[in-house]
Length: 144
Image (cartoon, rainbow, N blue to C red; front, top):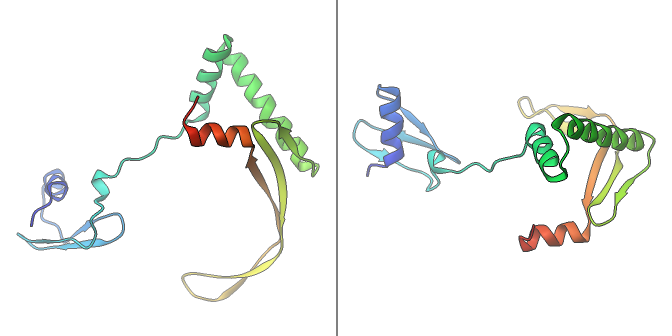
């Protein structure tokens, strides 16, 4: 049984090969026969696109009618204000959007996955975001 994406991999490399990597498993391949251990092919998986800072600044500038420089300054000001507030131990609540807060993680024991030895993980503070009801409703309903 031949799979089209496996043939594309072989054509792209131009050489014979022993292993083809799939999403969850490795498929062992002969010269003529492919034995597939999973139905989800790595080559056919679509990646979800994430908006980066530059794209967010472009969107902010376009929606509000300001320059990209002004939008960048506004975004930097927002992130700096959130970080400063969280460092103090306070919360930032934007009604309808969500709440930024800090959570304390206690010290705990973990394991080194390579050696299996027990390691100590220090206590630390981690930022959290809890989406507001209105924001969650908009996301789940698909409305803009």
